[in-house]
Amino acid sequence: MRQAGEPSVEEILESIKKVIARDNRIEAVQTRPRVEPQASMPAPRTHEVLDLTEIAAQILSEEREADDAHDALPDSPLIPETTVASMRDSLAALAMLSEPGAQPQIVRSGETSLEGLVREMLRPMLADWLDKNLPPMVERMVASEIARIVGKKG
Image (cartoon, rainbow, N blue to C red; front, top):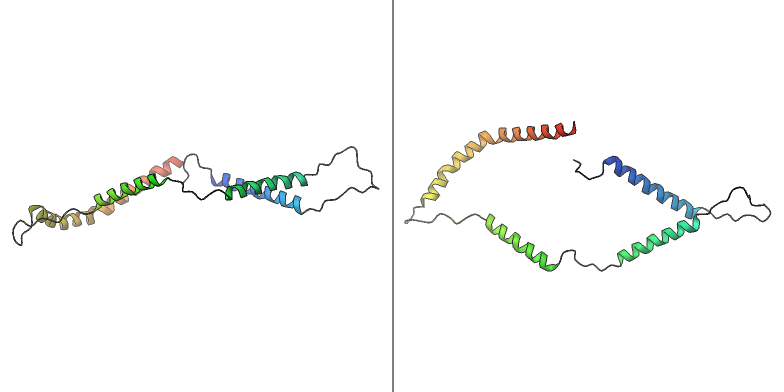
């Protein structure tokens, strides 16, 4: 799906075509043999011919120099180490919160707490309810989302 502000496929293809055409022109200019005017033939005075070979070669060499300068930049990290450490700590805290809680405590020898008993009793009922109700809920939500997306395109 195309997000707002992103170019369409047609725009991307047009851009690629322009780059290929530009590269082909530069290559053709570089590979074309340079023809020097012969002394015996008078140069036409009505039209001037502009030789772009030198200009194209200069532009190409400037682009290569810019690429070389870009490649020479040191490989420094994009994010400072302090930021990375902060993010790492936040993710570790999140992982700790997502771990399951403590097991039910033993009230007496061999018996579990009320919380543990309720959990054990509700587990099969919850599984049964999810088996019956979850697929239709998901189907309805997917159908409504597809309808919403199709409605926007129309």
